[in-house]
Image (tube, rainbow, N blue to C red; front, side):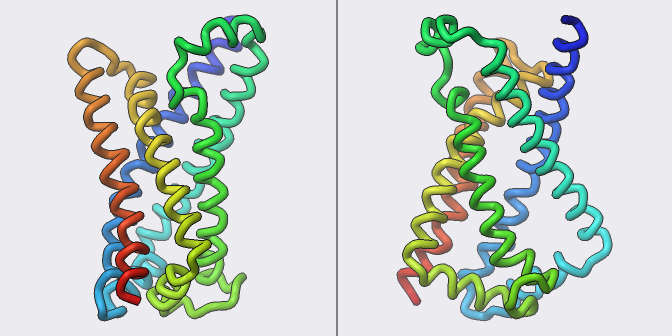
Length: 214
């Protein structure tokens, strides 16, 4: 029993650290994506080229993919363990006491993962030469995608779900790391709300502006 408990706690701790690392990456990605709103494609393409070729960035890229893999695998594993260890009657009787964000974390996370895979096909796999496209002109590729109504709607839906995922994920991560007391809990909740609104909204605004001016 102690071994199982220790394993679950360890996975939550590692998953929390992995999630926080990913949360640091999102504002960087958003900052680069905002260059898509410029009429000149050069700044965005230069930033994309730098991210694809600079050695230190490539090391961070490997770390980023490992972090995503750890976060996804541990998230799924912990969710399955929760399902298997919780009797049906217990789940039903305590459903009202469980945060809606917590209950649907696996589903919001899954939708974000699906979008991430699509994103890889549209951009990262082009850089690797696995998918046809010009890796030196991701600006044109992004603009072309944002003229497709179905893609834009999928983009918006996924970032709305990402916002819900981030709101609970930030609080859960800091709670796992021990910052859950009378002072830090409301502070973290407020910061989580701001982050979960501002970052997804920033991403969502980009295709909207492109759609309006295309």
